[in-house]
Image (cartoon, rainbow, N blue to C red; front, side, top):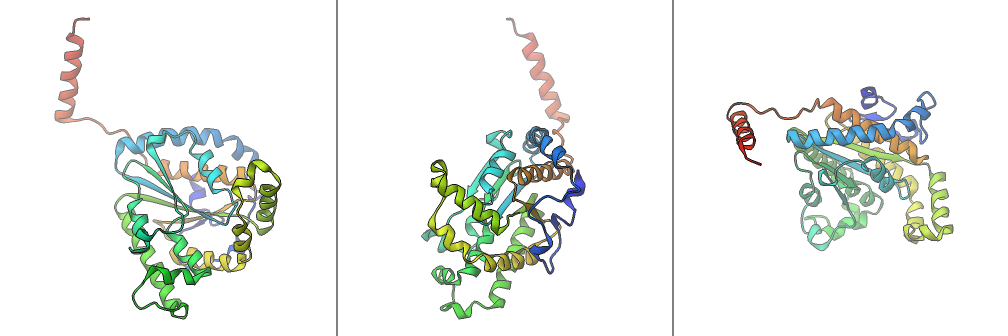
Length: 296
């Protein structure tokens, strides 16, 4: 199971040139799809047990970052994989366009505030990576952030974007050093599959609410988004903050693979319940003696 954590078909664990065309949007045929789908329920149960250990030990937090194009299935993936976990142990943040308050701070501020506490699984549905994805496709958004010295789109050169990648790398290294396990998922959906899902949302009245005409406008920038993702993933992959390229043309496949990866990563921590020793154990025994001495 743990081999998936380093399988180069999915895991990008160090910076360097990265190409999405080297990764499929469907699961490779050598993986037993039937078995993987069958074991998703087992994985969810195991994740639930491991989350309890994560909370009890209080030494680690888990930060799961989900990035994808519209309609790739981020929401449903999160919902299915985490459905068996105690809600008290998980928090989900869905980041939208920055508010006026958020724009008055640096671009990582709101994400630092939303970092999970030790013992907790935090899920960022979209994340600080929007600041090197959407803003690369629409650099005019940067001008609204009132960054000193930036007054025109033409000033947003490669040095500017590299400075943002550098800030992201430092931020994630800081989190990892202080006990946060980082897993970054890109749900890799094909352009043809996105079209199919958009049409389904338009034709199905129960799904109309999921569709925005702006989604089609953003689709026109598909190629630019793919380049932005390649640049961001290649610049920020690290052993302590790996990217996982998740095939997402079939939603059950992305759910099964994310579930399997999360389970493997939690198991790799070798979590245990804390053991009581010394004065704590003496206190427990005294409490037990007191309870047994009570008259019913």
